[in-house]
Image 1 (cartoon, one colour):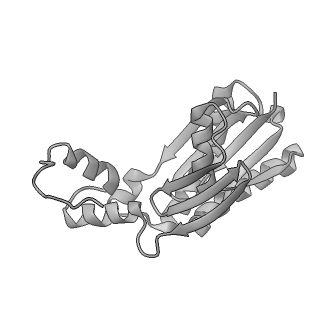
Image 2 (cartoon, one colour; image 1 turned 30 degrees about the vertical axis):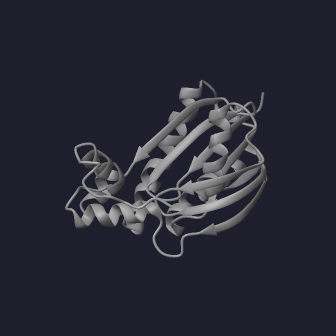
Image 3 (cartoon, rainbow, N blue to C red; image 1 turned 90 degrees about the horizontal axis):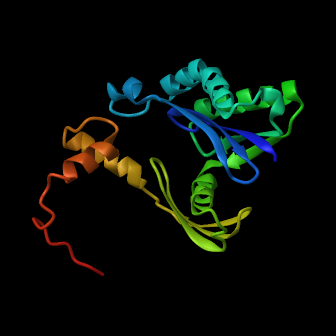
Length: 201
């Protein structure tokens, strides 16, 4: 059984997990920066990268400890290398590359949007390919044709705001707290779903 350390620092969460080649997640640790950015109403890239620098090593060590392994037991290290905030990505990439050099292990570079789609395969517990994959995340809303786990063709992305950005902007307009998505979702539970009539295509 091969063991992989995975690292994600594309935006404002520092995350690491230990996963097997059978797609079993042995540990998953996430350090959120929501409180840090809340006072600004959104992610401040420079603050995000500095927070990653403070949290990356503790998060990695905790992920390895929770998995009940040692760093030397790892077979490879995977890291999200694109897309994302440049400073945030740099922290994760530097940590991953440093570990690869120290442990003499291979580095696996991951496109984090494709990883969102691949996560569906992990949750399903079976092959979901070929498929059409839709990514609706904080900064991206994209559609992919996915032939297999390694062959993704981008069909298109929003040209203006991604869904997550729209949620954050609407939340700010309504005076709701950051992050916008959960705030709007919570507010919607007390709303009247029949107040407005929306056309259906």
